[in-house]
Image (tube, rainbow, N blue to C red; front, top):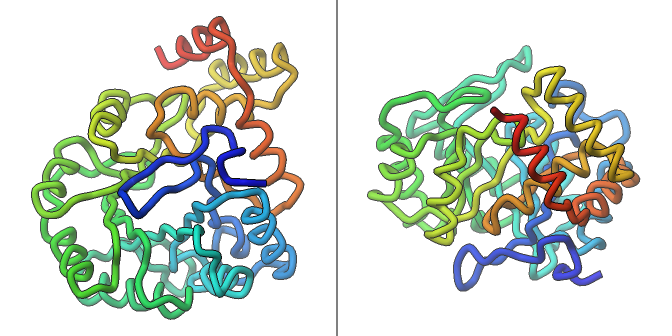
Length: 289
């Protein structure tokens, strides 16, 4: 299947960087709680290979998944990488011995994170690196100039091709852009959590990708009921409806649903192709009120 056959086609971040709007998030390929090895490494390898077979060219990862485990599985499954496959990673956190997520934005830790990604993915330069600076679901107000400047320096060294930022607000986006161009913003956003509506529209006007995570995260029971009801009426699943809504929300939105199952991956790809009728979109839009 050609990548353009996927729902939404592709989005060009730069003249030399285009990603399928349906990507694959590799977070679930590690063990429980994204820590340690998976129970079935062969199955994890199979999911990645199936993603590429389906035409997906956008693989989202981080070396702190595992840690190191997920990137090593990506390398085993796909290296040498097909010419059109692009791997988007993130830095700004590490894992301690108990598996806790620890934010670390020092020069030494950011450089080491880039180097770890390079080694475990088996590449000389990283396609896109997102600097993750906020909390789990919400940005943390304040300047991101110092860590983003460090990432921009790593780009100038040739270790990183393109830059992005994650879990940020509009002011932090502007601050980063004053230092170096960005090609993507990765934030928490879905039908029920639409605090980034204005930011998405601003980024779309600039040709910058917006990559939402947790497409079903943070829903209230009432909101979940509404989504389930719409999905049932359309003969689809809540996840398919949530993904389709995101694709229809704005042309610069790129999806990175994750799974460790080939069958579930195929369902996500097929489900995202769902065309939501206007009445369904209106009903879904209302749940964020």
